[in-house]
Amino acid sequence: MQYFIDTANLESIKKISDIFPIAGVTTNPTIIAKEKRDFKEIINDIFDIVGRDKIVHAQAVGSTAEIIVKEVQLLHDTFGENLYTKIPVTPEGIKAMKILAKDGHKITATGILSPQQIIIAAEAGAEYMAPYINRSDNIGENGIEIVKDAYKILEMNKKTDEEKLARYKRIFEPKILGASFKNVRQVHETILAGSKSVTVAPDVFEKLIYHPYTDWSMDTFNLDWEKVYGDKTLLDLL
Ligand SMILES: O=C(CO)[C@@H](O)[C@H](O)[C@H](O)[C@H](O)COP(=O)(O)O
Image (cartoon, rainbow, N blue to C red; front, side, top):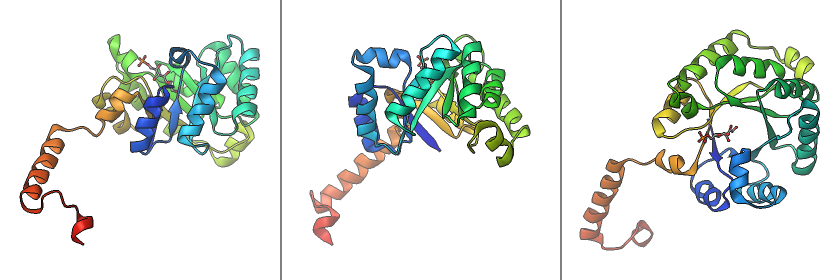
């Protein structure tokens, strides 16, 4: 399972990555713009915090395939192998994905709100496809159903390693990266539907392990222990 942090805020990234086992960080133009700092510095700072072995996602902002392709090449040259470029599932975006996948670039398809967008992006060579679960739920659709339907189709169309190498110049499994969550239930159901990767904003991230009875249990253990052993820890007793 891969958990990404959906923010470019360095304090939040430090806090979450210090506690949780994370696979990396995802950003989008809105998330980056919130920081009001130099783009290159933001991405480098994020890598410095999480480590260059983790994955960082940054989104292409060009509106034509030609510009997107150049942006991706520059991002790759500037930040290296573990920078995945997010490309929207617009006609120009899909066109760019096809060109880039042939050169082995690492792509995450974004702006996804339907199963067909996932399938088309996977065929075009994206490794991760990021459906927006809460944005879908918000307009009365069903984000989880997008994930379920897409996985069914991806499963039926699995490619052999030879086919992948011929088409994308690299071997990878297409992965659904659940995104846009507003609560733990949405994250959990997305994972149950088959997603092996999710990206979660810091406020929801902290709630993934929160339970009032866990806190109550720890308080009770501590009180009972203190009555007999005071503030001693096992370091004092062993
Ligand atoms: O798509 C990715 C990661 O690939 C995310 O960064 C994605 O853009 C964000 O989760 C969403 O845009 C955030 O959505 P929302 O919380 O504003 O509804």
